[in-house]
Image (tube, rainbow, N blue to C red; front, side, top):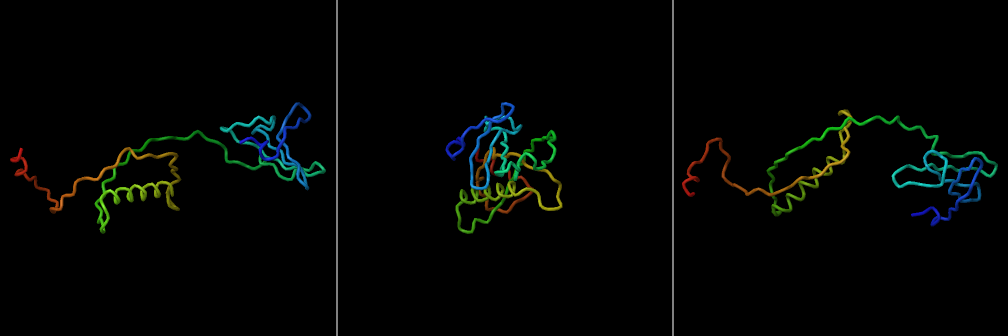
Length: 151
């Protein structure tokens, strides 16, 4: 949306600078691009907002807010495979799959717990999900070769 839709208009200033401006009872709000030179805003970049009193005193300037220095991120792609056995509690296997995906999604979005390393997930996606066929027999480390005879 354009600032014009919020009652702002373009004003020129000394040195050829321009800004979106809107007057209020106690001063004027100015919106400019990040470097403070122009009213031309980019959806990909940050904007700078200033509030100037009637006497010219700058009451607020978002450009003066200290920001942490930008560093080049040290990126890694991590692939995680999760296999979970769930007690359905009367739910369908598909409902359990969907619930498990939501649980994992919430955990990833919540980030690390206090005291853990400051690793931050920038983006994540599920590559696939499936409900595996349920085998109600107890698991065993022995191979059941009798199933091969049915081939």
